Image: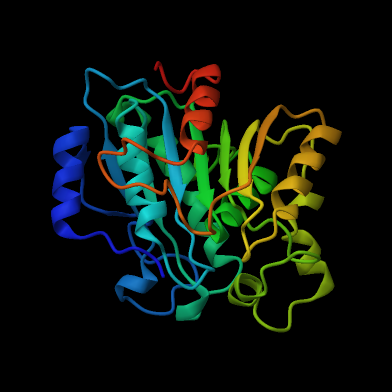
Length: 292
């Protein structure tokens, strides 16, 4: 069961991290492409989480919560953002459209692509470096992040929309117990929610991201656990193997202990998170995303 973020905990998080949590921002000024209605579920958004100005590093991460493309887990969105704020990273939690409300590929990909472009287009407003904008995702959100890491583009320089002129290529990727494959080792519930139940072999291959890595794929941090009974660790392993074949730098961590969907395995103020958090911070420091 996914943990819900109680108002009292959110208030505690705000106090401890000194984060500024801003209202959610629609990714498109009008309706999103292919929108089925005008309800909240039809409007993809970004929620900015801003670190204390005295601690901000100028780096940013767009965060894609998991939830099998059927829901969005707060502990893989809000909690990650609050934790990273403590270390000076500006975060934007993505609410993307879901298969459970009638959206299949490419809607989710359109949302994450637009999110990275939007952050770059507004970099000066948030005092972030447009060349230090990464993507982070867990489980199905990890698949969405990995899809952007392997299917980005340089933007449309002729567009009248400033956002669409921006590159969608993340500068770095963080993948937490990610769904990667739509073929062998696929998480079938995520696959059906994203692709529908009658996906063509061509679409399955296109969204099996271990098959889409190139030498232009950004450096990545990946982690998973031996105990994960939902998304086999082979997903992260095969993505790492593809990165290695293409000479793309990465950190891969496979821990023995840890259930799927655990996030940080801790609550604010995040004093005893799972060891992956310290390993990730070490990696982020080597990538000039955090200072401590």
